[in-house]
Amino acid sequence: MHIQTRNLKKEDYPDLKEAMIEVYSGIGGDYWEKSKINKLLSVFPEGQFCVEVDGKVVACALAILIKYDNFGDSHTYAEITGNYTFKTHNEEGDYLYGIEVFVHPDFRDLRLGRRLYDARKELCEQLNLKGILAGGRIPNYNKYADDLSPREYIAKVKQKEIYDPTLTFQLSNDFHVKKVLRGYLPGDSESKEYATLLEWNNIYYVDEKDKKPHTDSIIRLGVVQWQMRPFRNLQAFFDQVEFFVNAVSDYRADFLLLPEFFNTPLMADFNGLPEPVAIRKLADYTEPVRQKLSEFAISYNVNIVGGSMPLVEDGKLYNVAYLCRRDGSWEEYRKIHITPNEVRHYGMVGGNEIRVFDTDCGKIGIVICYDVEFPELSRILGSQGMQILFVPFLTDTQNGYTRVRHCAQARAIENECYVAISGCVGNLPRVQNMDINYAQSAVFTPSDFQFPTNAVKAEATPNTELMIIADVDLSLLKELHEYGSVQVVKDRRTDLYDVSVKKAARKALKKKSTREDDPEMVPPVIVVAD
Image 1 (cartoon, rainbow, N blue to C red):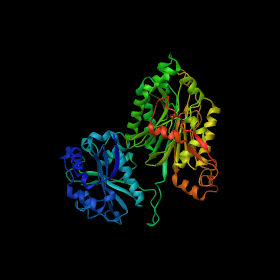
Image 2 (tube, helix red, strand yellow; image 1 turned 45 degrees about the vertical axis):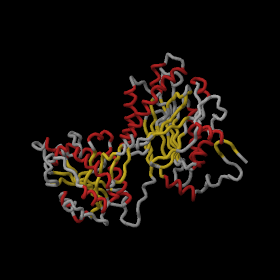
Image 3 (tube, rainbow, N blue to C red; image 1 turned 60 degrees about the vertical axis):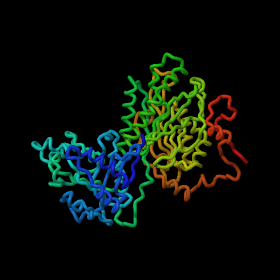
Image 4 (cartoon, one colour; image 1 turned 120 degrees about the horizontal axis):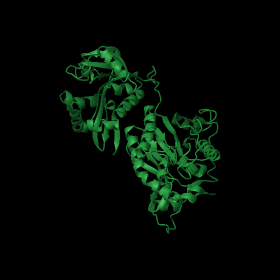
C-alpha cells in the first residue's frame, strides 16, 4: 500500500465524485459538480488537498481564504462560500476556511483525515494566517435532539460521553468550538441544520506579513524506552507497540524509535532450545512484526524506526532494523559490526551496506548498538547528508551502556547532527542471554551555543519504561555548520586523510551476491588514505 498527501488536480475528479457519493449516501449522496471543483482549483489551488491510496483519491479537504471580519461569528455555509461561487475567496485573507473534508468509508481506518488536517495546518503556518475556521456538522445530533440542546450535546461530546464522528475528530485535532451556528446547512437533517463554528489557532502567526515564521525545520522525535516483559501471545506484543505508536502520534511526532531486539520477549516459548536455534525461531516473527509496524506507520502517520530484529536469509542470521515510512514504503539496515556475544551465542553475521535514508523530514542514518562505537560509519553517513542518526541499542550492564552513550554523543559532535538512542530496560528471566537490561534513552545534540550546554536535548529516567518527546531544529545544524564556534565537518584535513567505503564492498553490494565463496563478498572496510 502506498499513501500520498498532495494537492488536488482536475484529473482527480472521477475519484472525488465516487468517494463523495459514498460518504454522503445517508443525506442524498450529494457531490460537488466538476465546474465547482475546477473553480476552486483555479482560485486557490494550494488550498485543496487530497490523499491518494495506491493511485486512487479516497479523501479530500477543500478550503478558501477569507477576511473573517467580513463575516463574523454568525454566518451560513452559503454566505461563506458566496452561494457556492467562491467569490468570497480573498487572497489577502487572514483565515483558512475549511469548506469540505471527507474520507471514503472503505478507508476510514487509516486515519487519513488527520493527514488532511495536518496539511491544512502546515499551509496555514506557511501563509502566516491567524488560523483555520470551519463550520462542522454534528451528524449524530439527531439521535439526541429530543433530550439535549445543541450546546448540551457539544458539552457531552467534549466530555466523551457521546461520540460524534465529525466533532469528536475535530476536537482531537486541536480545534475548539467558538459558537453554535443555526441554519448553517439547510437540508442537513442529521445535524438538525446546526453546526459548530470551529477554530484552530496558528501559534506561529506574526503580525508583520513580511516576517514569515519558519517551522518546516522542526522535527519531533518520539523515543521509546521499552520494558522487557512476557507476552501471552503475538497480539499482546502488538498491543504494547501500538500503545507507544498511538501516544507519540497524539503528540504529532515525526519519528518513533524502538530499541534493538525489542521483540525478544517472544523468544520465551523457545527457551528450551539451544540459543542459535531459539533466535532463528524468533526470526519467524520478524516479517509479521515488520508488516504491523508498516500498518502502524500509515494509520498513525508517523515514521517508525523499528528497533531491530533477527532475520534469516540464505541460512545466515542478521540483525536488521526497519524504517517504516508513513507513506507506506519501507527499507532496512543490517547491523554491520557484530559483538563477540552475538557471534558466540547466535552465529550472527554483519551486513554490507552503509547509506542514508530519505524521509519526508530530511536524511537520516541508522546504526545498531555496537555500530555507533565505530566512528567511521557515522562519518560516511554524515558525508551523505545525514541530519539525524537513530541508534537502537540493547545493553545488559551499565558499563556497556556507557560505551554506547558516550560514543553516540561523540557522533553528534563530530558529525554536526542529532543522535537519538533507544534501549530496553528490566529483566526477562525466561529468555537466555536477554535476561537483564540497562538503559537510559536520550536525544543528543552538537555542542555549541545553539544547543543545550550539556549537548543533551532530552533523556529518560534510567531503567524505567517511558518515552521521550523532543523537538530538534534542522536549521540549527546549518547555522552551526556555517557559523559555529568550531566547524568540525568543514575543518577536517581531507588533504591529509579521508574515510571511504572500499570499492570491493561496493561492487559486492551491486552484485548482491550471497555466496560464501565469493572473494568480493566482504564487509565494507573503512580506510585511512594518504
